[in-house]
Image (cartoon, rainbow, N blue to C red; front, side, top):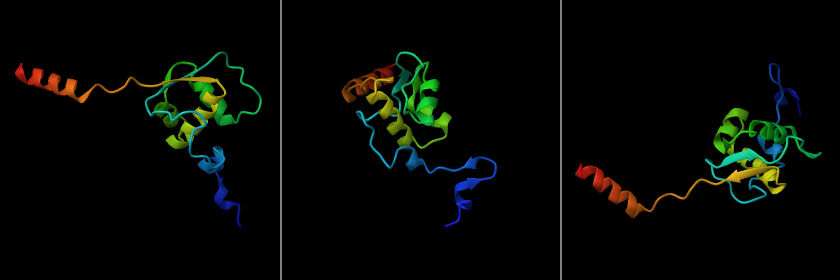
Length: 118
């Protein structure tokens, strides 16, 4: 097998995204919503054993950042970022703030009716 497909002359070595999660597709902690807000918990001194992607996520999330924005900034698939953030959340290195629940459909219909009445 040739090493050519694992090397990009401009970018350097290419690592398939599934290797970043060791083949895992489900986060270690609870499912994380696309618009969940991620923020680094505590300081920026991470424990030993984290991968470079974990460290980048911790640096990017010193201010509250949505999961989807983290994925976009890292240019990684959202599923991979979910697993990586799940690892950090399970180790209590980041906090995950879930979005508020969607309003009841009945309330939305009443609002639409009220707007139409105007």
